[in-house]
Structures are given as structure tokens and as C-alpha cells.
Image (tube, rainbow, N blue to C red; front, side, top):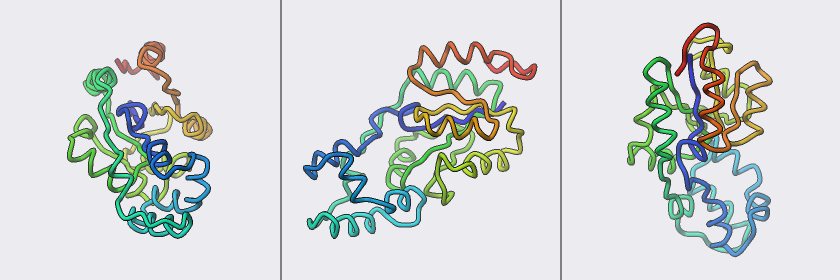
Length: 196
């Protein structure tokens, strides 16, 4: 079996920097995304850099933002209970990370060694497209050379889970570790393969 784990909100905590950035800029989150517009997606897909994002954003907010706020407020910590699940699953399965992220966050995770538990990492800013686009999941399927019926996807964002289910991937909406363990127990035998 192939397991695709989302990073932020599942494997790592304290990864959502938007509330802190919005507070720092004295705006709300809705206003942040309105001002960011398409540039937010462009950043996630690696089409622009953080520096370019803040240049565009500065012009929108009429305020010069000289430092990378995405770096300033990013302080991820690993969910150790999830790491233990990954280690157990990895004994008999392939485990990859499928994450919507930006370059600076990716580099911080790399520096911290946060990706060492995965066989491969698929990051939106490197692929050029992001969840919930179907091609995000299909790209991983192609690269891993495994059928959709042998993939289990785990993400804390319901929109991403629904998108994966629509193309035939068994998907788990992550709410907490306890619920995930129970759901994985129900998947204890998928297509005759013991997964945990």
C-alpha cells in the first residue's frame, strides 16, 4: 500500500502562519487572502517567490513589507503520535508526503529533518500544482507506479480529501490521532494486504 500524508496539520503542528501574519499586519485573515488573490496560489505552486509575493502584497496594502513574514512566523513541531503511526506503517508500506507548501517552509522542514520519515516528498511549489487539483494526486500515483486502489490519503483539509475521493483514492479526513488510529484499524486489510 501507498500512504500519502499531508504535512501541515497532520504530521506537523503550528504550520499555519496566516493568523500570525494577519495579526502582525493588523488585518483579518479574510482580508489577507483578498489582498493576496491569485498570488497565494502562485506562491504555493512555485510560480513566484516569497520576495515577489511580499512586493506585490506591499503594493496592495500600501505598506512596505521588508522581511519574509512566512519565515518569521513559521515554527513547526512534529506530532510525535503521528510519527509513531508512520514508523509502524512504513514497516510494510510505502509512505510519502503530499504537501501544499512554499519554498521557505520546505527548506525549514528539510533543515529540521522533518521529512526523514518519508520515502518521498511531493511538494506543490516543486510540482507546479497543488491540492485539491486532481493532477496532484495523479502525479504521485504515476511516480510511485501504484494503482489508485492501493493508495490511502490522509489530510486535515476536507476539500483535499473530497477531491482525492472523487478520483478513486481511499481518503481519511484527519481530525485527531485517536480517530486516525481507529480508521486505520478498519483499513487493517485492504485488498488482502495487511497495512498495520
